Image (cartoon, rainbow, N blue to C red; front, top):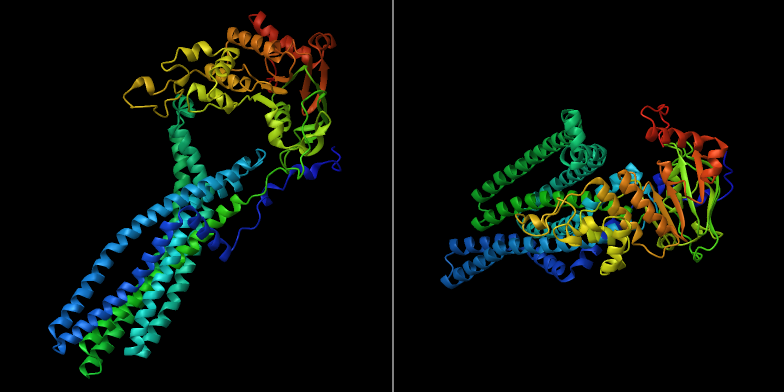
Amino acid sequence: MPVHTSRSPRGGPDRATAFAPPGRGVSRLRGALSLAYGSSAPKLIAYVVLDLVGGAVPVAVGWLTKMALDRLSGRAPAHTLITLAVGLAAVGVVQGVVPHVLTYLQGEVDRATGTLAQGRLFSAVTRFVGLGPFEDPVLLDKLRMAKQAGRSAPGMVVKGSLGVVRAGITISGFLASLVALAPLMAAFVLVFALPVLAAEIALSRGRTQMLWSISPRERREMFFDHLLSHVDAAKEVRLFGTGGFLLGRMQDERRAADAERRRVDRRELLTQSLLALLAALVSGAGLVWAVQAARSGTLTLGDIAIFIVAVAGVQTSVAQTAANLAQTHQALILFGYYQEVSAAAPDLERAEEPRPLPALRKGIELRDVWFRYGEDQPWILKGVDLEIPHGQSLALVGLNGAGKSTLVKLLCRFYDPTSGAILWDGVDIRDADPDELRLRTTAVFQDFMHYDLTARENIALGDLTALDDPARITGAARRAGVHRTVSGLPQGYDTLVTRTFFGGIEEDTETAGVLLSGGQLQRLALARALVRERRDFLILDEPSSGLDAEAEYEVHTRIREFQQGRTSLLISHRLGSVREADRIVVLSEGRIVEEGSHTTLMAHAGTYARLFTLQAAGYTEESAQPIAEGAAL
């Protein structure tokens, strides 16, 4: 068992607690408003001013209407009536135009804020040192909510907050009018607002909790959606006839999520209906009182008009205030996920004062390395001691699940050892800057990436400084054996190697992109690794697994030429390709069980010799003894 007194705390914070507690209330509000202001200050200020002006317009309309009716009934001079009519017309123009200008400004602010928020969020994501966060379902759900919040929450907060202020201006103006006419009715209308506000906030909290609870189901639904609508799984889905099964699973997730939404919608329907009934009772009672007061001569015709407008306006504004508070509350909760992800601590600890990583001169050493992906997970590596001398090639072989790919992840510092250490010329790689470690390393992975970009860009992504250096691009392509293929494409290296996007007009098939075979895509991935010249350490994880025998021979010949004088690690299930390595290491169940040259290991007649003989028999005999289940390399 591992000795946990080494460097295990350096593995970084536990994934479940890697986030600081999200900001609350004022902190979230300040963050959202700051984001909106930082993205488009002039347009935000114009939006605020116009929105607040809009809050005073209904009150102005009410009072101008009252004054006009009172002057009409009192036979006022014509010029007074004309002045009031012009005032009403001017306010009407403002009332008609301002909403459209606000819609435009809101869209502008939302777009600018969304772009800024997206940049900040994904800048935070790129700060993750390793792979752990991308394998944590809780974080993935938070990230999905954060992306949604970054696009919409700041705008919702601005709109909701201003809506509350605007409604407050309207309510204050109308309440002042009601106090002047009927203080008791003003108090009655004001008290009515309290249950409305409480109910709307409760509904908002319930809806936000529902959105979080169904997030895993929505993520699974997107997974099945991807399987049914993307080429990745299209062959198997059609050949094996699993489309109906996958569709059923997708709709099961949709129905379960919809059931949660329906439960919240029904609660909102009942609550909103009760609030509407209460509003109708308040309005009805106020109207009865106004009619009685008019009959007794207490109120004038203008008083009745502004009273009716004021009661309706207060009720409408109270409902708007409640809705805006609920919207702001929901947006702030969502924005909390954005803040949480944006402020996430690195998953792996970065040294405060990184030690310089020297050019590799001695080699890389693994000292008693133990590793597992979690406290409840089995051990993948169990006390591995390994040296990769400078300038030499080391081949790593073993059965599936032996820990080969995990060892590669540790060497790239995508994870830290649970116990033990990895040294680069004596420097613990946890004490170095991970960016510097990766700058000195190049690799082609077994699960290589294909980018829906041009062939040139697919190669240059290995080192963006080569993007405008055709000689380096073609040199890497030649070493990977893909130059002839790429040169023969319609646009050469500038051809899109995908049919997902179009480089020009969709009808122009020459710019629509081409599809390459799996082996050709693998060669592009290899070229992407080889374009990183002058790197100290080369990792090749199954670099020829998708190639035919002739292509495999060609690629390995060129790789051997590229490896000359370089420190390299080769992983391959085809043992014929590793026999010329300076040293071969056999990994079994997380432990090194054999090491030596091909000749030495064959003479030892152990695991390597048995696997090599079995594999060779498959090429030399019509019928070879099958390897036992689970013994695939």
